[in-house]
Amino acid sequence: MAGGLAGLRARRRAQSTDYWPGFVDAMATLLLVIIFLLSIFMIAQFFLSQQLSGRDTVLNRLNAQISELTELLALERATSGELEDTILGLQASLSDAEAEQTRLLGLLESSSGAADAAGGRASRLENLLDDEKQVSQEALAQVELLNQQIAALRRQIAAANAALEASEAKEAESQAKIASLGRRLNAALVQRVQELSRYRSDFFGRLREILSQRSDISVVGDRFVFQSEVLFDSGSEDINPAGQTELDKLADAIQELSVQIPDEINWVLRVDGHTDARPLSGTGRLRNNWELSAARAISVVRYLIEKGVDPKRLVAAGFGEFQPLEEGETPDVLARNRRIELKLTER
Image (cartoon, rainbow, N blue to C red):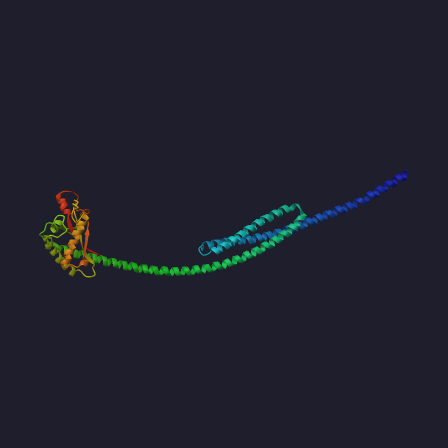
């Protein structure tokens, strides 16, 4: 009996010893498999990080080139619409690539919990990176094309700048010539004005000698003034006999002056008609002071032409009552405002 119990115990110990080595081997094998899978995952992560780092470098280089191209193209917006469209397309592609990179990084972070899924994801990522490399190569080709087009634009701009500089130089030379001509013209005009002033002084001096006996004929500034009563009856545009006598003297003086003044001085004798402020009756041919003043000035001009004065040297103007010598309603003031003025001037 005791011997049977001892044999049973021996058999149980033998059976227990046989399970333990197999369990240890199984656990060791499982641990090696796990370590192998983790090694594969770490290697895949390493290669994936290298690929992503290289891709970031390419993308940064592309961003820098595109930024430079954008600044250059901004200077040629008028002729680079198609180039801007290409740049926008590249920027859109880069934005898509950056979005895809962000998505891939998210996938990479989420793959750390599953070693088996990491292998498949790494394969997809490699395919995606290959596609992105192809896109990057196409983008680089487009950038190179843009660089060539920009170089051509720069050459065109340089040629345009050279032509512009030549044009500006010619313009500056022309401006200098114009300024010189202007100075000479101004000097000639000043000389002619001075000559005309001298002849005006001589003319008025001659008129003073001829008409010195009349108190109602005077010199006011640069004008020789006849009171209307010297030439016209009240309200009339017809020159009276006494006025014709005075205008005969004036015509002789003008003809003497026309001989003395050189032909290059383009002078005229302006005859200005003025009235007082009292309105006309309106029943005659002339309706208002405008018409009366103009008609009297024209009558003087016509009479001088009849006496041999060149019509090209005469001008008639009517001012009505709107250019009085004095303000007031007294008979003396009204008489002084009714006048014919002669002014020697340049046309």
